[in-house]
Image (cartoon, rainbow, N blue to C red; front, top):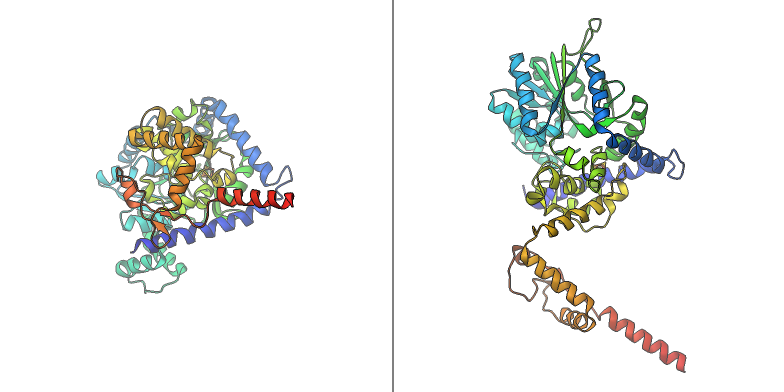
Length: 464
Ligand code: SF4
């Protein structure tokens, strides 16, 4: 599949969802204190209240969840989380595991560990199911297979399941549903994520559109929910604020098709549901973010991907270019902490700092400020290298010196170009970046010259 087709799929998918988001958010009167902007303020403030006292809220959640019959586990890092889950599954003697969408499970690379142990792990979210067939990772936190053109899925389903070429999206979904149905019935363990942890009831809340999370959490005898510690909200009364913002921001819906609030395993008088429920609360460097005042707002994130869909950089390069689980603007601020700044300092540079992400974030995370903060820290730690430091120092010298700036703009105006592009700067090639990128050629007279001419002709007119 050509790169251009994938890029087209990303652009179409993200633009469509972004347009729906705009309509869904505009439906709420933005000036009303209880309207869209008001909800954003309330959500940000609730999240900040929780983050100011996270250990207490986590303890309250754990006590209430255990009172309802769940077992709560705290995992300090990815290895700890994997081992906790592996131990639970081993104790069940399971062979088949169904999974609904969970970015934290991607973050800790859970599937690879479980498959190494010999389990059959089946992703049941349609997008994740498609990616699993091709051993790919999600490229988007809400639309995992957004980079896949439909025809590619048709070809794959035709080869594997004899589904006809030209099948509609609904027919492809029906094929996947037929294939996965038996796995739901066979699975001994279901693994889910969780959108919210409700402290005062000990519940986890999952929002989805396909119903696969509901089956994953209710059909197998053992349910394991794996959730980041930052997903806490204080009370069930706060939930409507977040549901309203999450569904509108993520998919442009007033409400997702399914909202499941799960409080413990099934009780003796309930016919359906798992006998056992485990909740694995994952830290994995979130405490580092919590302790850092400048970065702490990152933990308000409700993973709606509105920032991803609106980002002009993501729309051009797609998610896999970010090289890890969280992509787009949220990835560019989160990955440098979760992976370490040394390994991901380049991600905050994948931004024009246009601020579109900050504008749409439903919990008002100052994403562009945090991008700049990461850049500052990367420079202070000398991670960006001597070439960039030299280039920036030269740029600064030119920008503050009138004569040098004049000379540079005159030089740029006469640089050789072809088809309206300057293939590269007239400098020795010292980085890959230089040899693989071009710039639009300068067109027409310089703004300074136009301005001088205008001043001169205005002066001449005044004088006459
Ligand atoms: S940073 Fe904001 S817009 Fe982006 S995923 Fe998180 S909550 Fe959504």
